[in-house]
Image 1 (cartoon, one colour):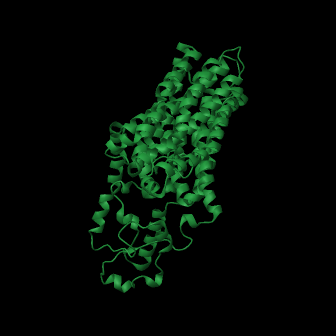
Image 2: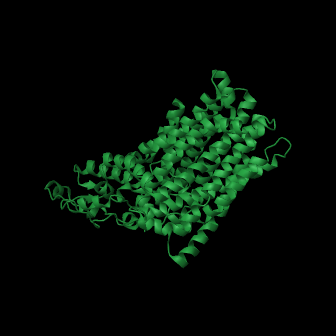
Image 3: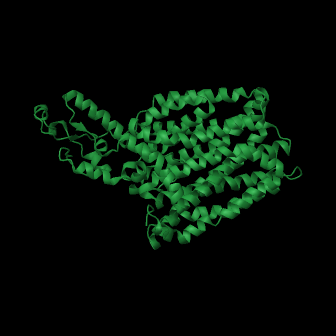
Length: 520
């Protein structure tokens, strides 16, 4: 099963080949089920009884001349013919133009989702005034959208492995139906985009495509208030924010319609069905279908295993707390920055949106510097072997810079202090957010290589629910404690959880040895 992918795929090589396969195929978590297939003598693969390597799948296809005659099949020999890609059919062998089209479409879909979650914050007070409700009620429009991020992947992740990527992408049209439904539907691109990129690009080619995707992921929420603020200011109508989103999502729907399917098992299944129809037989199958769990079992795993991991695994518990706090801080800025710049400094909605550029700058700096982590990782592995703790260097740095960012934002947000102060804090916050998130997700995946899908799902569910709660309490916290002390509270909490990556850097190996599911 493929989970929603955010920074998990941000900078290669976060996954080695074995971990990536474990991440993308949930049935590897239940490898014992494959033995049931092997025990069935009526199923014979022409290569081997195990799941083939990529090289075997791409190069070991059987020509038409090698296939059994139709008469032999009708005589009931019982052999199953494994359908494989011919040369040039694999998504990884498509032209660069086709692969980039799939990559850009998936990335633009994620950008549209990120804008959809954040653009309405550009004029929430105007929306509340028009609809004659309190600010707290209108904040639910953000909370419900974010809550959908946590719930939607439970359906879309396993469903994408059955019907493919393309039908799931086209479902984004339901964004227009309502905020909760929009949140559910909008989780579809996040569920699939990492898989789409890994479908069409080899591991060594994914650097730039993943950078494009991760940029839309992190920068999209910050661009939302920027665009939303100016749209509301220039038009005087908050409804135009949604009309612009309507136009953007409409363009995305058109792009997704013209985007080809990229998931190899689905493409092979279509090829097998075509051959079965041509030869009037059911002998042609894909190796993936032979080894695949029933959809009901996949759904059971998708729903239950993340909950089990969430309450039983120490690493997942603590890293979920940390990464959920980072996610909550991002959504807190959607409400804190308008207070810092509109209420305290008297800026208009448009200029307040411009302040989010500071976070975007920090995100860009972090993405540019993340390759340094790969050098540190390789150096650590050369000395100590390949261990998950080698992924924690950026997170340990972020644990120091994040509180600094929050302290700067807290105590430079006075009317008499230059706007440069909180914007500098925004730059450091954007930088810290990215390096913590990428590093933390990488550590989870490396620590649970055979259960990576469920581990990430456990974190994502909790993160989205916590993020959804932020709009309901953040403004009350800031107004009741005053802005400076409200942000100080968040800064102090970041100090309290700061030792988490350091603890696991030194003690993570012993924690993993005591775990039933973690990689020893």
